[in-house]
Image (cartoon, rainbow, N blue to C red; front, side, top):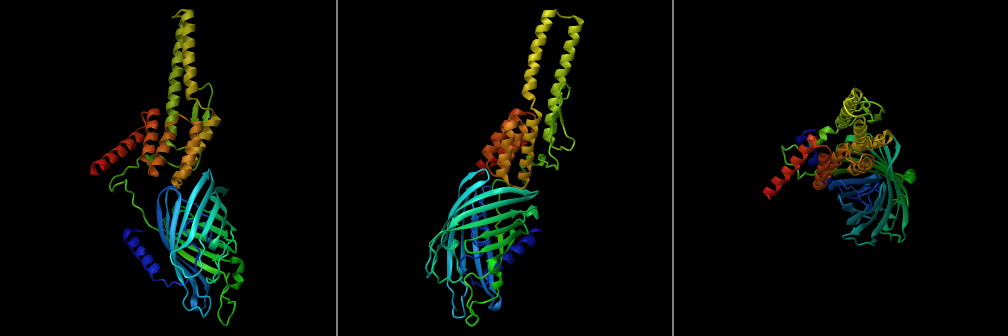
Length: 466
């Protein structure tokens, strides 16, 4: 899709959002930041600031197109904070309700704890700017487990929490009072490999304390996501029916067919200037279908070998260098043995020198040798980090690299990968630290040297321009 087509598409979206007639109640599906369908259960992002605008609609009855709509703005900040606002207008509850009230609401969510894949979020929602009816601020706490592998390419996220106010009960009868008690809510999200390049299709299920909601999020492009759901699915038999046909009074827990559109606002990278290509190191990170496995052969001139399906350039170079060192040591031993056989040195001196040489060889061998099991474990972690790196899950990629370094503490390639991850999330200081460590471990690592030079040169240009 070219730039001109994108501009037309963005204009159509803006016109669509601004010209839609608003008839809606408060908690329209997908209108709150960090939500599944109607519950606050989703994850915050630490990778980069992300902003989006959107529109969502709950169709309650096809007669007179009784529906709810909402225009919303969401902001996800890389410090784990999410905030947003939504403009809504309550749906008409009957023929007599000719002028439903409208409202502007504000919402805030903060990630307060994380331990591996366990996360705790707290937040405040439904802070109304203006409303003539009774209002109660909704507060909540959510316990989330993420990245639960359920099948190849499929991951599950679960959420359970407590919420009050409209999180607990959001009746279509907006004139009713809101229950003060808190209630439990549940949520499930399944990430699938479909449209993975755009972020992956997600299937969503949540229970908001009063009803069951099911839906999905389909990323058509990296910026545009279409949303669909059925709210109060347990009452779907009531769809297109009235509680009172004469007055056309709707059910307070009426089911609805919900559709929406979320448009991510493109962000400019301030650190990278146009016509300057810096991420040279990324070209070397080639993902393979098979994992790289190392084998150690005892009593061999080339004790390390890598499987033929491994196309990792840096790893193959490392194995080649190690085997070359062992070959040199082996040749030295052969020459020494020949000198001993020839009787060129005294027996005592030969034994002494042989002992010194053997000790030196043992030190070199022990310093460079990594057991087969440890090497395989470390390389599996590096392989996982590479997959997360290409799917832009940089926090998970960083965890896998650090796990690999527990088994391969002196591997220059691991530090180079770690620096590349920090570079991607914008932490240039940590990126430079890790790249310099990689260069100390392997002074011939030219790709890392070029990356350090390019980043430092870019910084100098920014300092001079300021």
